[in-house]
Length: 274
Image (cartoon, rainbow, N blue to C red; front, side):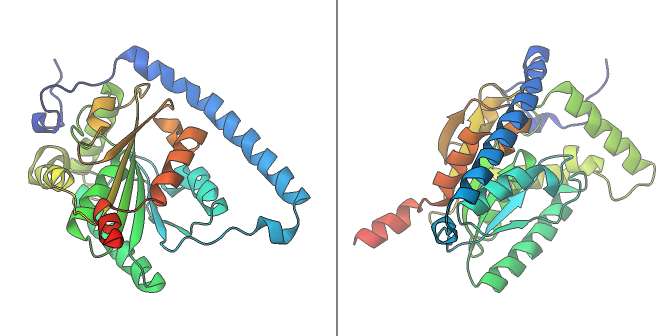
C-alpha cells in the first residue's frame, strides 16, 4: 500500500475523500461552462440594446481579491471576476499563476497583495477564494482583520484539507517528490505533513473576528473534496448544486457570492442599530 504524503491530522475523523463516482460527476463542468458562455452572450446582447446611461452600475465601496484553488491560477477565476465587475465590484487577482508552492509562502505573498490593495483603495478588502484559495482567505482574515472585511469560500475544505480525492493526493505526492529533487518553488513535504501544514491548518480553524463577514458556499455534488469539510460552523453556509471545478462560473454560485459581498458582519449591523 502506498503511504499518503498528506498528514493524517489534515483529515480529522468524520471526513473522507469523495468516491470515484463523485469525481466522474465533475464532468458536468462542461455543461456549466456552456451555460456561462450562453448567459454571458445574452448579457452582451442586452447591453448593446440598452442606452449607455442605463448600463451604469453603482460601484461597491470595498475591493474584492480573488484567490484560486490548488494547482489553479488567476485565469480560472476570470468568469467570476467578469460577473462581479458587471455587478459593480472592483476585482483584483492574486498574482498566482499556479497555486502549487509552499502554503505559508503563498500566504505571505497574499498578505502583501492585500496590503497593496487596501492602501491603494484606502479600504479593507473582501476575499473570494475557491477551494484552497478560500482556506487561505479565511486564514488571512484571522491574521489581518485590519485588512479583511469579509471572506467568501467556495468549495473550501476548511475543516479537513486532506479530505480530497486520491487523484489530487497523487498530484500532491508528485509535487513533493519534485521539490525533493531540487524544484524549491514547488510544495514541500513540510507543507502537507509538517509544521507548515499544522500552522496553516490551525490558522484556518481559528475563530473568525466579529467584524469580518464569512460565507461558506458548498455543494453536495462536489467531486474533489468532502463537501462536509466546507461547511464552516462560523460561517453563513449556502448550498449550491455546482461541481467543484465549475463554481467560478455557475450562476447559482455567482448570485450567492454577490449577495455575500453585499452583506454586513453581524456586529456592524448591531452597532448601526444602536
